[in-house]
Image (cartoon, rainbow, N blue to C red):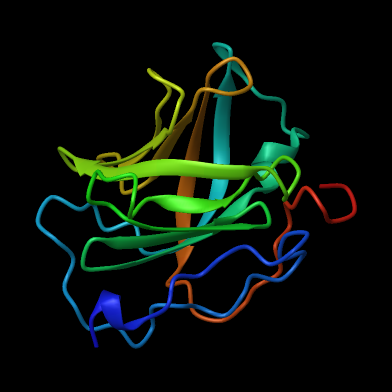
Length: 176
């Protein structure tokens, strides 16, 4: 089964809460496109820097978890209560068309691409803004975010993404 054969996933109204939705691309057998970093799996934040300063151990970002699924040029990132499903082909048409993690209602449109082994997201209408995910030499995922003064989060792969583990960081969960 190819990525085209599986319907696009979207964030449910109000976000998905404290349990990740079921995986979407499990039946897809299409290989990753050349140049795509293999980000598949369950990831947990292990460290973060915000505005040039290491975040404190009690910072909520350090409870963040996300699951990434990939198939062909398609990538689905579930984290913080949202589902971002896109073709990483550099087009607005096939990018993320979902809702903001900040309120689960504001529409977002984001162009997705793979560039030199990096997954890049560029919000439409916001020139110069990029969110990136890449693997470092130790296999950690480095997630750069322009919000919060420019945050860089290091995540560790903690599983293959199977099942629906508890989502410890969600803006709509108690304490999230």
